[in-house]
Length: 497
Image: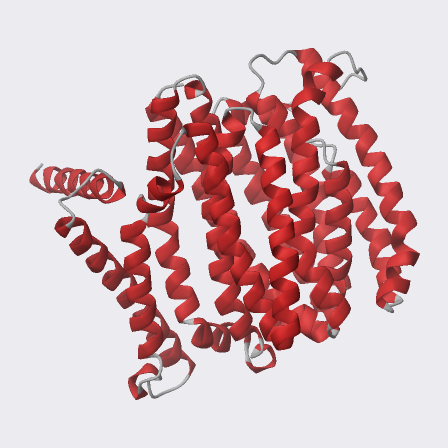
């Protein structure tokens, strides 16, 4: 596949994730008006445990099929068989652990929620393995359809259930419906007739073993804060923390994940060309940082009016949590650009070692934060370990590409500097009397939009000035300037015609 086709695939997938994120954002905002923090708190406790159990048994067959040098029909059937065995074992494990979960947290409602979620994890493990082959070819049209359809179905079911039940069962119903839709649509988008066999087990397991171990440690790492908050604090606080995390994920992590899903397969042809691989990785890192970090910075700076307008007064506690978690989500996602180059070169053992170090860092930072400042300290401990996560990703990427930590960090220094100045200006501006325009809700919304646009313009101007004074080096600024110039020229040519 040529670069033009790859770029088209990237646009399509990122566009799909952007639309899905928009649907997810609307869903989150609507449901927050219908439900309460306690509802989110109950479901997130089960979801954290289910996700951890899923990670313990996750075989990462899609990633294996994407990165293996040669894939046959026997590989696909073996992958499907392994996933089917895993789905059955996982559903049984979730079902059996339901009473223990309810006892541990002292919440009887968790037992029935876990039983319902066992159906979700079963359905979610049986998707067509041929979807991985489409991703391998950077053909993301089917994934575009799959992503949007499951978001729409999940939103519709959750909304109807929320209007009817007005409790946590709406979230559970939406989760099950989403997985059921993904299962059906995967076979519609990528037809596949499964055959039970393990003939290619050896080919798949060697790569999958380290990736599975890495996924388990990574999931334990990612869900540790939910376990901790759920055990140490009330369901209200857990729900607040959960919704803040969901908002940050919908706004940034999901769209970034789409970009990263394009990056890794595009680096596979450069596996044995270290210099070219390093250059492609640095370009990807700088571009992702340039496009996504400014938006996260402005969202964090405007967290107070965003939460007040979007969610209403009963969710005021989300403000400070969202301010931190949106930056955490963006930092960790930027770091995973480094993971893309590691997976592209099949160095999965490095990913496992990184995740172990990250887990230790998170244990120390969150424990120290909680001991020093309770929930607020735990939150800032979470932020500290996000920075460590990012640097650890850079470290393993450096082992693969030969790039030093400073080389990787310096590739993003202009964006980071502009983000610091933008955050200080926008956040400081919220303290002025002009930050709250007179009038009703519409005036508040318009004022928020104006601040957001002003922040983006300010960031663009600052980064452009830094780039110019730095001597206009190669980087995302040059690529963006070239794209804008071409767009203006095409527009001018169209008007002339």
